[in-house]
Image 1 (cartoon, one colour):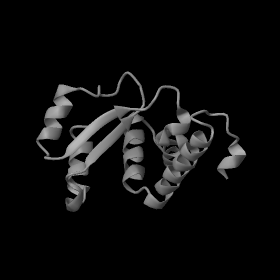
Image 2 (image 1 turned 45 degrees about the vertical axis):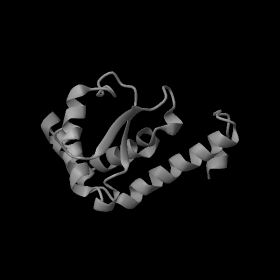
Image 3 (image 1 turned 30 degrees about the vertical axis):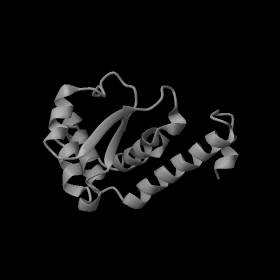
Image 4 (image 1 turned 90 degrees about the horizontal axis):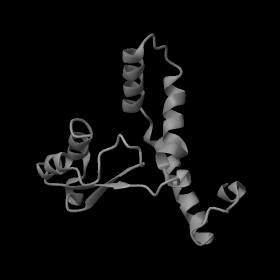
Length: 134
């Protein structure tokens, strides 16, 4: 995240929005950066941006936009390529990520928004019907 994500955010973040907080949501995998990581905080401080980490609530797949569709969509694109080893697979995923159509990603966020609305209708629960999402 320090070597790739932070520089990309810094390069692309709109100048007029530099004062806004940028939240990076992670799932609760043990391999992720702790939200209070000093090395990450020092790297962010050098950017002049307010970038913060947060973890999603545990066991909330409906609230994880990555699990909702982005990973599956990216995987389906990567599956169209041939990878003979792990290095080629990583390169193919990187290429598909770089060329990913933002309109497709917008669909993932719209699905997330719809799930959130249904959770609110259910007073914070997850007993809503999948049919209500269409």
